[in-house]
Image: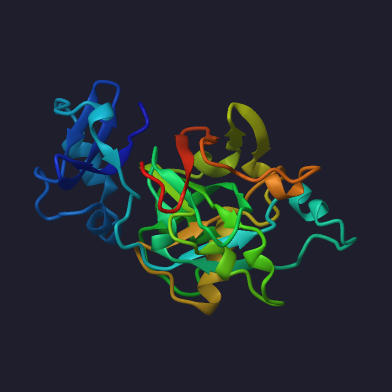
Length: 291
C-alpha cells in the first residue's frame, strides 16, 4: 500500500490539510469536521481515520498551487536530541566515549518553517548550518513509558532540518537554546506519515544534500539511542502528550564540521531525505529580504 502523506497548507488565503497523492492534493479538513486541524488529528491519534477518509477521494488541488506549512500549527513540547550517531560523537574530537544518556534541548514552533520555504539567516550571525533529522509525533500520552511499549505512543513521522546558528550555541557554557531558536531558522515537513509498525523506523537511510552535494548520509539502525529508548527516557522526567514532537538527532557532516566550515548562504538549496518520508526542501534567505 502506498505511504499516506498528510500535509497542512495554505491555498487562496485559507489554511487546511489534506492527503498528498500522485494526482495532487485531496482536501480533508472539510470532510472531517471533528478534526478541524492536523493538530486535532494528532491529539486524537486518529490518522487511521484520515487514511480511510482519503480512500476513493479525488484530488482537487495541484501540489504546486499550495503553500506548505509546518505540519502541526501548535505542536506541544519540541524536544531535540543531540549527538545521536556514532560519527557525530567522534566529530567533537574531545576523546570522550559516546554519552551514557541523550543530550536534549528544546525548540519553539516559531523556529521552524515549512517545506519549500526559505530558512531565515538573521543579521546577528552568518553561521547558519543544517542538520537533517527524523522527527516523531506523539499520539498517545504517557509517563514513564516502558521501552518495549514506547513505539505504541507514536502517531506519525516527519522530517526536520534542525537549522542552527553555530556561534550562538556557544554563547553560554551549559546551553544551546539561543542558537537553536532563531525564527524560521529550521524546517519541519513536508508532511506527516502515519506510523503503523516498528519496521518503519528500523533502518531508515537519512541524507542531507546542499546544492545537490550529499553532506550527511547514515541509517537509523546506527543511532546511539533508539527511537524507543528516547521516548522511554524522556517520559521519565516529563509527561509526553499527544502533539509533542521528538527530533531524534543528525548524522555527521554538518557544515560546522567541514574543513573549512561551510555555512549556508542565500540561494542555497537544502534537501533532507529519508526512506518512506520523502524530501524536505528549503532555500536560504536573509531576514528582511524580499521573497
